[in-house]
Image: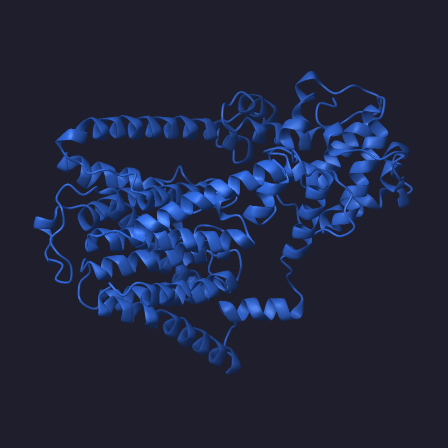
Length: 544
């Protein structure tokens, strides 16, 4: 089992964090061999650093008693994988903001440039997501520091790099989350003094970075990181729309308090329900985990869920802080702080919407609850079962990857991929990602006035709405309904146009003014007509 613990388990564990290391862009880059090599190297690093036997460790832990050899490898596996992902993301952040010209060469094949000039996004596309991963990395780094798993001086250097990256992300959520580090030092008196000092120093490192960036900007240098974000907010260039989407979610709860809108229906329910004020961009969730769950589950089931989750978190807290064996306890407390970090973020957004947060969070909760049992002779069958489950997970991942390739060909065709219609037809046969193919069919539909839709297009709009009902899809859906002009079709098209007008999205402005253009066909004048009766979002489901 030692070989499994040392090499196979790190790779399996790192899979949960690996999306943070893989560049993302307009087209999936998972086909690039560079990312596979990066994942393999990171897995080996986790194997060497995280789960090697204590007898092999070059430095024994002086502050803690000798650990039980039967201890589960999972806590250290999780901690090490998160630390590796955090440090690599921090290095990527520095390149994106401070050395962007370096990404114009061969390095750009490995590291994606930031789409938000002056701010780091890592490979997660969103600065807030990057900041939470960096906070996780800082917590994991502190655990390794406490267990003397790091060379002398590496603890301070790694923490400094992570704090610099948090500031470069410009995430206000991330900067506030840095307070968790000194909070841990205050609460946990059993941490080694040098680790407590490192945690207390982390906010000072972040503050020093903010000061340096502010001074640089004042001297005529470029606005970077948090300075960029502050300038954007002060100028009104950006608005998160968070308050508006929260108000909209509360309105949906008020309209459907008992059963909610249903899982997977937030976007279409929110988009097609009249709102006096809404953000300018389409959202797939409420940007708050509590609000989102209450909206989709309803108050009774939602509150029951939070009661159960609160009970589980309380049980995890008791287990973590009552752990007797110190070396094991510090790992579990690190996992517990990870839960607090993602919980804080979840109040303001919905990071658990993404697998690269939800999977490590589930592992951290399991570690805190003590669900990982000692790996002794009596539990070898458990190890075998976990290996089989891990192999099955990898097989499903390979299947999903092959499935994704059929849909990827629609948007990023390679030589010999065939015409668009054929690629869409193939994509609609996919098991996991067929909705993306239906989206492509819906937005490329060229309706003929008075003609029924093609049979393959019948369900495309409803299926596509489960991807994201954005302005492009709304315009295509409204055009198709108005052109078909069946019973109620034109009025549903008017409803879509009215909802799209509420967004005030730049991409839809010319479409909404079609009736003022004398060259526009008369059947398109529905965009300027008010709906003759109110429509609910549920009436658009199953309406073909």
